[in-house]
Amino acid sequence: MDITFRDKELGPVWAKVQKGERLSLEDGLILYRTPDIIGLGKMAHTVQKSRSGDGVYFVLNQKIEHTNICVLSCKFCDFAVKKGAAGAYEMTARDVLDRLTPDIKEVHITGGMPADWPWERYLDLVESVHRTLPDADVKAFTAVEIDFFHKKFRMSIEEVLRQLKAAGVRTMPGGGAEVFSERVRKQLFNQKIGAKGWLEVHRTAHRLGIPTNSTMLYGHIETIEERLQHMMKLRELQDETGGFLTFIPLAFQPGATGIKPSHRHTSAIDDLKTIAVSRLMLDNFPHIKAYWVMLTEEVAGVALNFGADDMDGTVGGEKIAHDAGAISPMSLKKDQIIRIIRAAGKIPVERDVYYNPLHLHAERVIGKIPYLNSIAFHAHLHVPGYKVLPVKPRRMGMLSEKGMIDAGLFSVMNYVEQAEQLEPIGYGLATRDQVKSVMLFSKEGWRDLDGKRIGIIDDTATSVRLLRVLLEKKYGITARFERLHGGVNDHSGLDAVLLIGDEALRHQKTGLAGFDLIYDLASEWYEWQKLPFVFAVWAAKRSLPAESKAQITRALEASLEKSNEDLAGIAGASGRRLGLTEMETVEYLTGFNYRLGEREWEAITRFAGMVRELEQPEGQVPERNDLPGSRM
Ligand code: SF4
Image 1 (cartoon, protein in one colour):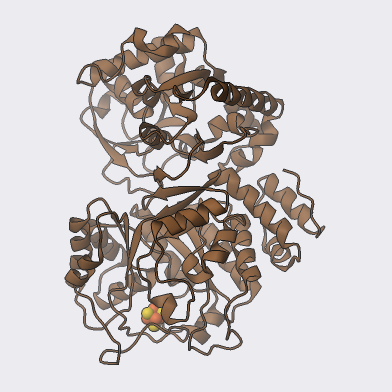
Image 2: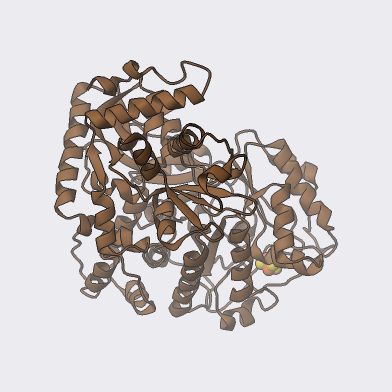
């Protein structure tokens, strides 16, 4: 995208971003120092849109600060007190449960670190929440708290995390990172772990399949260079593990700490720049959060067009930042968050703790699969009056069932199951032979997988069925499937892992540690059936007016035509992020057929028939001739 900059220094940095090249510390300094705040915002917003489309995520969450008693004395902290001091409090598990309501999807637990709580009290707290609200996910304990448990209870960091995970912790918050600078640490929080310790806790969590958030506390005594070095350290760990969900710049609240020279709140310009710079520097982070608690609702709302795609949530009462003088409300109601997101021109996406969309608060939404394989459909897609949201295949089917998607590239089995509501519009994602992005990584050959455990990435609706068809019908064996959530997972104990999309594409090149055999499911199907395999079908709600369907079809055709003129141009940068050369990216994309003809529909009906035979009760999958597409 062309941007006209007032600051000419931004041009070369933007050229690097567009080519998918990584930004350096010097680039970051240019971004931070530019007076062209609008140019900077446009760069970050363009990147944000390429990742999240028009979506902005929020969660119905409840913050729990179980105690404010803390053995440490960080200089900037207005929250912690010593035991017995006025205002000291400790919550029981019952107190915590009394705060929870059935609609909550994330319980966020962090607090002080008292000297006298036994380990069992923390486990009991997590277990009680998990038992009481099984549909909610527990996000608990910062790296600083994990390190405290490790030292106090004489357990390794890994053991602490394993026990918390077994108790019900699903993800970890990103607090306690402050700024990764020894200079700042010595002055402001010298009793806390530094960068090395914080990163090691998160590295261990990711290895155990616990995704985490990350933060940076800015606006006190740190320098701009230190902010950028902080982001680069996070980026390095994300390259290694892929376990960070979001980055949260936390604007320092001066409170009564009296830290000089930061005796006042950060400026809105600094806040927006930090959001935008982080979006551009953290090229491997899926989300950037505008944490309204620190920023205020007004600045957070503007940040949604400066690179942020995540509004945190309703929070339900926050103390740490408010004790330090935050001027935002203690909590927001769901409709207030929805209003802020809509005012920014975005789709409010209610999510779970893994950022899976649960509910869209918008109309006229087109769903796109956020993988490189369908980039030609989206690169130039513009349908007036519609917003676009990237949604992973299985989730697209779920949202469509609720009537929240008007048109989209549906996983073929979701399309088949919803054929009465969905009308195909002629396009899809079909392979001729290999696909490279639906891959089984295995310790065993096919026939030796009989009775074994196979981890299935949560995002799939069709590939999991293809795997079952291959196992049971082609090889005559059965295996036990276990759902893995999107993102990092603990693969120990599994005999094979099914990955799809960009993650599969990345690993088909690098391999997956511990799994030496790699199978391409489309090749397996082709060798067996001598037919292409269709992974996805473009379809629109049957109830949409004919003109709307025609409008979407025309826009898809136009995007495909324009994209095919320059596949390297539209996809080179995305391919590079996945470790592919430009030639490999183009070769991968030209392996797909985007227009569905007779052979593709024959393949769909044959596959759907096999799935129907395997999946009872009968009638769940329409008969071959009931598929609307089969008559095309
Ligand atoms: S910032 Fe955290 S670790 Fe430091 S004193 Fe406050 S509660 Fe304790």
